[in-house]
Image 1: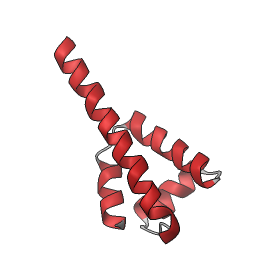
Image 2: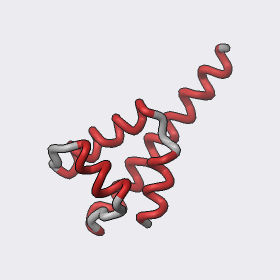
Image 3: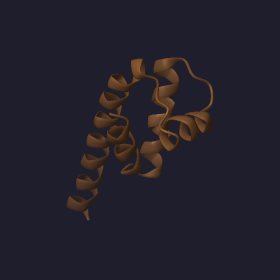
Image 4: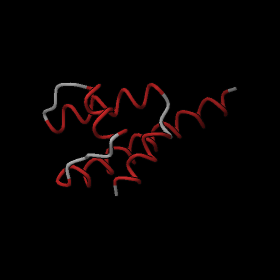
Amino acid sequence: MIENIKTMFSKMNDYTRDTALSCLMSEFKLDNKKAITKNWMIGGRIPEKYQERTVVIFQNLLREQTMKVKEIEVNF
């Protein structure tokens, strides 16, 4: 599951990544985006109890990102 999370994170644009980190901070009562990025996303040390919810959050954010890109393409 960790590789899946890391793959989804790598597919996010900068705005979506920042939103994802903010969501993780809020959801799991964390206080440092850099630590989440370094330990969870780069290091792959995501606590098992948070992995399932993190996947759901990331899936929703990627879906939202894709919809925004499609909307821009249509309007362009």
